[in-house]
Image (tube, rainbow, N blue to C red; front, top):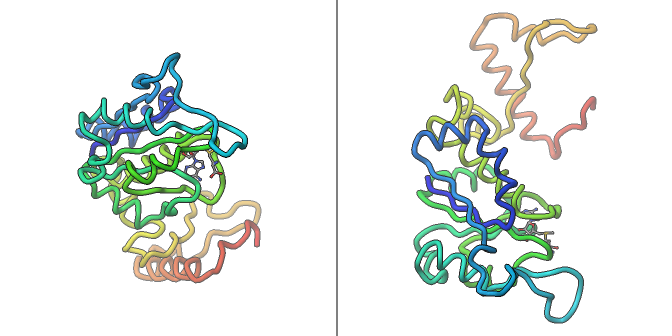
Amino acid sequence: MDIDIFTLFPEWFEWFFTQRHVANVLAGGSRLELVNPREHTPLSAGQVDDTPFGGGAGMVLRVDVLDSALRAHYGVDPVELRERRRVIALAPSGRLLDDALVDELAAEPAVTLLCGRYEGFDERIVEHFASDVVSVGRYVLSGGETAAMVLCDAVLRKLPGALGDERSAQEESFSAALGGDPEYPHYTRPAEYRGWRVPDVLLSGHHERIAAWRRERSRERGAAPDPPAAGG
Ligand SMILES: C[S@@+](CC[C@H](N)C(=O)[O-])C[C@H]1O[C@@H](n2cnc3c(N)ncnc32)[C@H](O)[C@@H]1O
């Protein structure tokens, strides 16, 4: 898979690249590239943003700057780019990232992520360059970088070779193996701690009963309107 991230703060990703599953998929032939629009701005003094028409606080990322950066990187008019690859503008108001969308993106050969900053994008970037607008939640982050990391983390761990044990990704929350339900609870040693005992069935060694118990817990969690509060 080929992922390009357009960001004004590429240094934010230094830590991300060192994470095991990211390093594994990169070693396996996937590509993750960072492009800083500031390096391609047609404006003087590295300008990338401007004040909003109509007034108001903050600065808005300019459409001509993103146009130049995308054109310089791909060598085509960015209006045509979205027909060749998914070009995702990250924004709080976009389609919520969920496991179905992660699967969809993990099946793509190439994806471009546009990280906003300040007040966000000039809307013409979204209208004319992006194929999708994706949100990682209904809250506002200070920039698209952490949203891009969330998206890449979830997508990359679905790729072959990302995880030490491939089974980890097969039966986890929202997977087809669990019928789309959240994962069941896990326990490890000690079997009893401060009087809190691990459910007996998990210590029984009876694989069918353990599988049935896990499936039931998973269904219960899926049926709950909201995850129960801790301790609730
Ligand atoms: C401070 S935010 C802009 C918020 C915008 N003024 C608004 O009220 O919707 C700056 C950038 O962070 C990114 N961002 C913030 N929250 C996000 C979220 N929940 N999901 C995806 N991207 C987000 C977007 O790229 C956005 O352009």
